[in-house]
Amino acid sequence: MADAAFQSLVCFFIPYLAYYDSDVDVFTWGTPVTAIALLTFLLHLGIETKTWTWLNWTACGLSVLLFFTVAFAYNASCATCFPPSNPYWTMQTLAGDPRFYLTCLLAPVTALLPRLFFRALQGTLCPTPLQRARQLALRPRGKHPAPGGSRGPLPGAPSPDTSEPRGLSASASSSASQDDSSPPGSRHTPPPGPQEASEEPRRGLQEDEFCMSPQGSRGAEGIYF
Image (cartoon, rainbow, N blue to C red; front, side, top):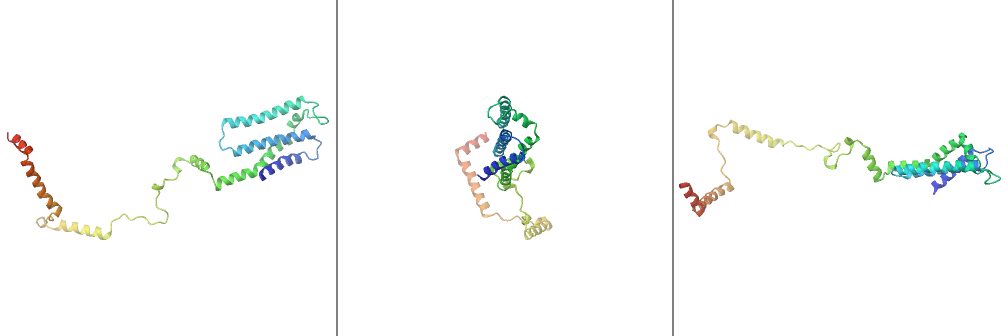
């Protein structure tokens, strides 16, 4: 609401001050106001448009072209339309006046400065998901943030110690040196554990059962013959 009121005031008072204390009629002053309103509307639409396609550019270009074409044709053909004022040749006269181009350039930019500043501030401080995706798409491939699993340790955090404890490495080295220094005859193998000792009778029992089975006797007979 406030933005619309500000744009209306700018579109009115900048042409008013530009042609103040001059002998122009209402048509010569009203035509720049109409052109400024059209350009302000199109630029406002461009700020709010998220994606520009050739349809957007074509529609905006045709709008401006159609306005100036109708204005030139109307002011060239209507000689006595609204007496006592006469719009005849008004657009052709304004086309040779530098103040017309200055007001058509200055007024829309001034009217849209608050909205443009607001959109820029919003995109910087509180970007939408679409704006974040666009920023990530514009970054080079090597500068994308690494996924959560591949991040290194935080700065200042202690690095994990992957080395073996000193006591364990020292005992292992001392036991290895004692085995190397002892004579070959004095070395002995440790007695088998309870699991290894229980596996030996089970293995012999399986061999005896195989020999006593019919399959084992047929295998033996085949080997004998």
